[in-house]
Image 1 (cartoon, rainbow, N blue to C red):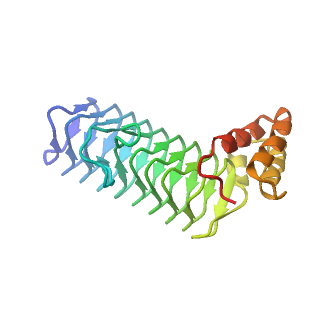
Image 2 (image 1 turned 60 degrees about the vertical axis):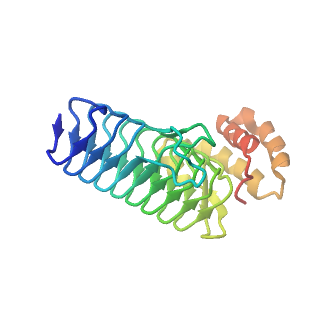
Amino acid sequence: MAIHKTAIVDKSAKLAKDLEVGPYTVIGPEVEIDSGTWVGSHVVIKGPTKIGKNNKIYQFASVGEDPQDKKYKGERSSLVIGDNNSIRECVTIHRGTAQDNNITTIGSHNLFMAYSHIAHDCIVGNHCVFANSSAVAGHVRVDDHVIMSGLSGIHQFVHLGKHSFISNCSIINKDVPPFVMVTGGANPTACGLNLEGLKRHGYTPDDVLWLRRAYKVIYRQGLRAEQAIEVLKQMEADNKYVKVFTEFLLSSKRGIIR
C-alpha cells in the first residue's frame, strides 16, 4: 500500500493492500476501496462508500459527499461504485437519501470527465460516458452505454435508455428511449437512432433495420404511446431489440422525449 505521508486516512477505512493514495487526499470513516484502485492528490472520499477494483480517481474529485438535497437531515446513506471506472478532475458523486433507497449506485467501466456531476439516488449502469460539465440530477436512472455530451443536464427522475446519446447543451426533462439520439438545447427532440453507437457495439444491419422501423412507429406515425406499444408488440417476434423499445415505453413514468 502506497499512501502519501500528507494524506489523511481514517483508521476505520478498509483499503486494499495495493492501493495508491496521493498527497493531501482525505479518506473518511466507513470507506472501502478494493484492489488495483488509484486515488490521486487532493481527493475527498466520504463514507459510507464502497469502491470496487481498478478504478482511477483524479485530483480534486469529491466522492461520497452528503447529497445536495434540502430534505436531507443527516440520515445514513451510501454510495457504491463498481470496477474500472475513471473519475476525472473535479467530478462530484453524492450518496443517496431517505426519500429513495438511501443509496447511489455506479456500475463499471464508466468515464466521468472533468466537472461532471452525479446526484443522490442515481443508478448508473456500465460503459457510460459523462462528458465535461454534464450533470445528472437526483433519482435518475442511466442504463448501459449511454453517452452524455458536454454541458448537458438531466432533470430528476428521468430514465435514459441504453445506447441513447444526449448531444451537447441539451436539457432533458423526459425519458429518452434506448438507441435514440437527442438534441436541441433547452427544447430537446429525438433526432434519430444512435447508429454509430450501434455499429460500434456489434448490432447487425438487420438489427438496425428493425430498430429503424420501431423508431418510425414511435416518432413518425403520429401515434400516442399506448398505440405505438400495440404496434411494437406485433413486431417483437421479428427482432429481440424491438422488445427493448416496448418495455421501455411501458415502464416510462415521465413520458418520452418527442
